[in-house]
Amino acid sequence: MTGSNTDIPKTRRISHLFKTLWNVTKEGIIAQKKLLIASFLLTACSSAVILLGPYLIKQIIDRVLPAKDIRLLGYYVIALVGSYSVAFLIWCLQTRFSIKASENIFCKLRLKLIDSIMHKPVKFFNEYASGDLVTRFANDLEYISTFFYENLIRSLAFGLFSLILIVVLIAWNWQLGILSLITIPLLLIYVSKTHNPIAERSGFARRKLAEQNDSLLDILAGYREIRFFKQEKRLLSLFKKSADDYTEAAIRANTFMEFTRIGIDILGMLISFLPFIIGGLLVCLGNSSITAGLLIAYYQILTILTGQVLFIFMGITKLAQVLPVLERIKEITDYPVELEVGEMGLSDIPKSSEISFQNVSFAYPSGKNVFTDFNLIVRPKEKVAIMGPSGSGKSTLSLLFLRFLKPTSGKILFGGKDIQDYTLSFYLSFFSYMSQDTFLFKQSVAENISLGWYNVPLENIKAITKMVRMDKFIENLPDKYQSVVGQNGLSFSGGQKQRLALARALIRDPEILVLDEFTSALDRDVEQEILKDLLNVFQNQTIICITHSLTVAEKFDRIVRL
Image 1 (cartoon, one colour):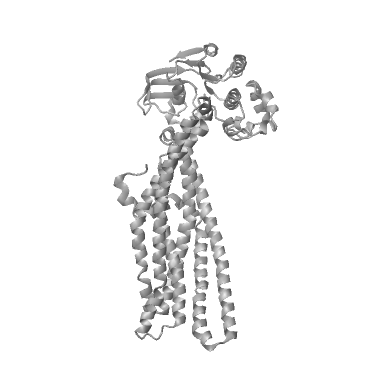
Image 2 (cartoon, helix red, strand yellow):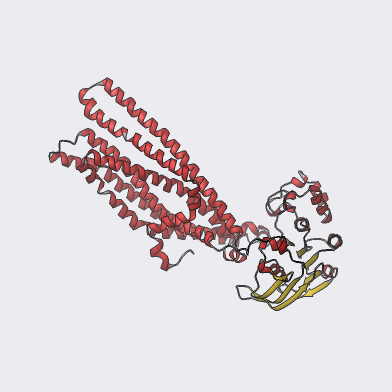
């Protein structure tokens, strides 16, 4: 949940709504300022042309009809059609510029958001569920994007248009103009009283949508377990509960929003009839400057003005609904990224690749203690196997010296220097890593293997796939090494995915190779063949292997038991 109860008075101010929107989108807005300025200039031009309509109608009623001049009527009709045609073309161009600017702004925001997410520390991904992040990136961003063009940009354009209309109304007849306009503040009062409840209901609905998405991701990711353990009914009931909760929250939010819109529409209709009421009163009081043509022209202008003002106020109401979504996006962009210590070069390359754990302690945020004053030295070119029962900290150990986790206390040294003193990219360039949870991207086989390296010769990729016993399988694929791997390798077996991940680790020719249960999905014969080739080819590199298999561990120089 974003914010707290103590924040509500502040966050519900309209000024805060616009400030939040500006903070989220300002980089894109600045980049698209030329298109936006052109859009508003076109709005002013269109407004001026459209205003010819009421003026021509006034002339037809007050001048042409009393004279019964058909020829003059024809001229005015042609001018009327022409003015609206020109206004239509200008407005189309304005719409094109507005849409282009809006889409470019949110394309930049999407890139900024995903770049920000990729640079967050590991704890960020522990704090935010995948379903919640998907909701924020897809649903929430699309919601803001739609609002930005359909409500905000158009509201600003209509606001400029409305100012021009107000000036014209007062200029034609200041009494009729001012008396007709004084009721418009009623709309602002009405909106100010309704946007807080809309924001609260909308924010609650978005949170329920995120919970529904979490349930959906559980079903999609765990479909095998669901089917094997016959959990279809249970998972369906859990999803139904989250879907029902979201539906109920959405009904409440949308119903209140529609009630507000209906109230605004009724107020708008009352305002549009004011020229006849006020104008009739002024005529009855002896004002001879008010004609039938002027009343109808005012009715037309005030109808247009009311529509614009209603749209603007509805945009303000919608902004209250968008605020919780904006704050959810801002919460992600404001979350601190993992800072680098600075640029590093050839002079920073350590003279030794020795890894040293010095009195390292580590505990997870949940409070589970894994290590206390742990010490370990892994010398250059040494082949070390790490064994221990489940939960003893084997994988945590690898995550610590790969800097996915940070020690609670103590130091980890690389080449005699604290690993936190290296930039992350520089430090990791000495390593290659294969985790026990293999992930393959929806890219080609070659791209999955050469991940992070550019222009890798195909011959090198083939040599590595031969080492991991995947070359024959890949050659039989329809597009061979250019065959696209399914989402997370769904088209590959567990063993094949593991061998592709191993190929990815080996192609880097690293100084230090970290393998976490790298043979767990392989049969015994393939395991021994790969292990033999691995130790022969990488004689001059350090290899740290986390394994449950004593058969594998015995092939290494030293076994560390946790």
